[in-house]
Image (tube, rainbow, N blue to C red):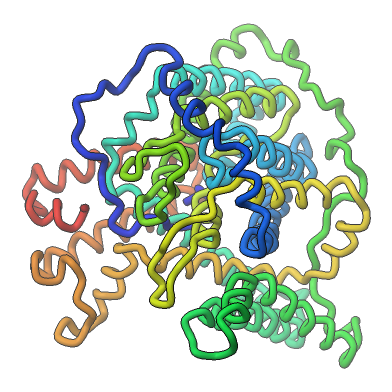
Length: 525
């Protein structure tokens, strides 16, 4: 999914203050500024990640980052006839994730595979078949062009363009990614009830394991706001809630196997290839010269779409992670949503170039997982108000190093095989639902079905007529539905352009008088 836990980092994310600063800067100015601010704090980025909260975050997001990589890898394997498969997807997730965590200017953000990226790669494979071109060389040349465009964007500070995005686009993107997680999890469970190869016992056990994992995680996560146990126990159980949920769900599955026998109660489990090699056994380096010269130049056309996709994925996710509500202070202006974007775009461009020439999937900002990461690292008071964030490089690097260990080492791979897939469905339900909490679009969506006389008062409740609020919400939800359908269609390759057009839609709504400027300024604050 495009991939927008997470999420959502940004209820009422303030738009960047109007500024006369130029969009484009002299070559490398933005990159030097980003790294100049953050690299002197590298030592504290390590020491601040050596604690129990960082460990709990690592365990939770290890599963949340690994499972999509395995799932997307299987889909890509089929779509590309094995040119890229699970080992390439998981390997790229691990390698790029570690490099990004250690080298980026905003290491709290995570990168990984996203649904829109997957849809683009599949569309590129279909294009290669139609033109009778070899897929991997076409993919590599497209990726190199894309990396060049992103490099130019980084060096000219083109990410300043996202200051013109507003919460209207941010929230649509965030809810879209959360919805992809929720729908995917529900479909995985529902599929067992209609599959001809599934028994009633398997279907019910799948539902039970997913539900137990989800409910355990939700209950324990809210424990820090309760009066039970000591404060230290409450906080630790809350921090480790998803990891405990995975353990409890897995124990339920194994208990069912012991009671009813593996023949009747065995569930599918996470699995990775036993050997670390390419899916087809091909050499790692892609033969770039196998593509005709005309196609090498023509690859610049799909590269423009890919660059838009990666640019938006990366920077919208960065806006959500940089939201001032998380009170991050390291090397940044506290009210800015742009900090680190130029330096991070440089890292993304270099990673895109490398993954292209070795035939690995591209990585960019993972919206829901990044939002889950920053929320999991946040320190809150008893009322749930955020007091600060554990800004560090350790949790992001550790998450992806663990994923890499599962690819390279037999012991972690064997342990992973004890986790049933329905347990991961429960984690995705938890991830998707918690990512919606705090989003104003989610609050307004619930408001569609609430009695306004008793519903909680929101900042727009008295300032904007309810009909206008409902219309604004319905338009946003319609955009999400349309993008969900588009992503699954044969036209999924144009998905990034639709996201880029959201500010145009917002402008049109005001210009045509569908929503007044006064109401829009309040709703889209």
